[in-house]
Length: 261
Image 1 (cartoon, rainbow, N blue to C red):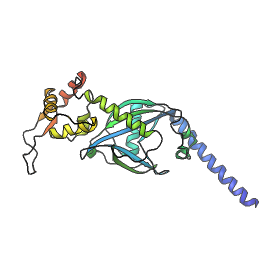
Image 2: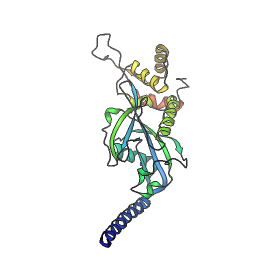
Image 3: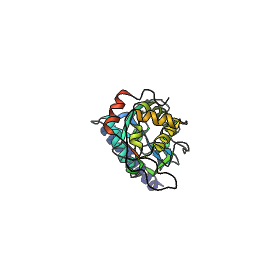
Image 4: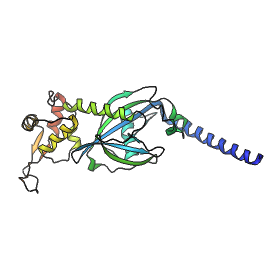
């Protein structure tokens, strides 16, 4: 059937040309072989959670990420990618590792069928981000079926090497407890001492002595005790605190002297 054959030949040529045009546009707009992956953490309901996107191509979840434009700073690219892919913006970002295994995309090639450019080998720069979940309005992009907060203790199946990236982000977060503004970015503006301690226990994965924790954290003079305690509840209302931004910044410059070992 010659007519049928010509029709399908034209169709496949059209699809091929469309892919080539898309790949050419991507190659001219973005740096080749460099990508970004971001582990975005929040503290919600006493749990440490990470922001994940579910791919439309597969029933797997991924960290939000993207690529670096030709004339763009890498950190600016990470902020832009987070905003475009999840709606998260104005977040604390920290670069923590580079991932360059030749087998990073092995077994996941069907995720990149739409663009041959996406199927090339990428070296990914890993960032972790810390946000107050109430300040983020999650928006799944056109590549994703869903965008959700997931507990780091109950993770779904993840694509590519994103589980490894997330695990390393968690380890970096634990190591940075002494000299990064982790509590400042994850908690509500006003919080209790037990809530602050619970945050650090969740990140470290271990219990901390209540009295020792309070004495040590107060010794850095980074907290302001509010006059009014939190209202409600059957028991004595707990005292409320907030971070003193200037004192916190000064303390971070000197580190917390391995406070949370």
